[in-house]
Image (cartoon, rainbow, N blue to C red; front, side, top):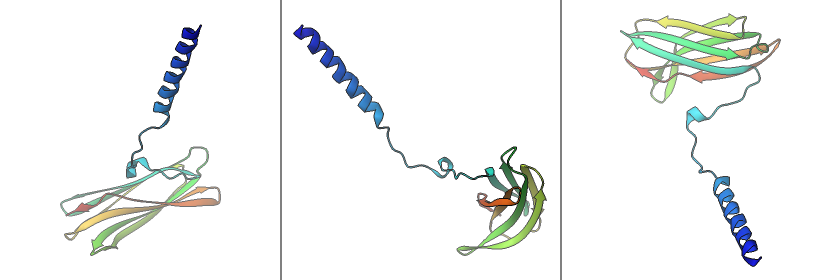
Length: 141
């Protein structure tokens, strides 16, 4: 009887130790790609920039929530780095009466430098809205 109780106690201790080992996962510092902000009407926002032969192609994509989002207003700004700040090099605005929007523009005859696209979207549900912003990766020419 003592041997059976001893065996049961050993098994219980091993199970507890095993569960403890799995209860504390290794902590890692999240990257920017791992962090996401929760919005009421917006599912995803992104901006991309490509430059070829001193001509920029700017693309902004905003995905709202189907059945919730009613309108998206995108302001897309091409920015050029000036020291430690960014200056406006071109800007466009368009309204989409949809829950999903892709907006593309181009700008030619760029001067040498580093550029990015800033996408600011007002994402609506009826008359209520939220403002979300995204920046593209930088591109130099």
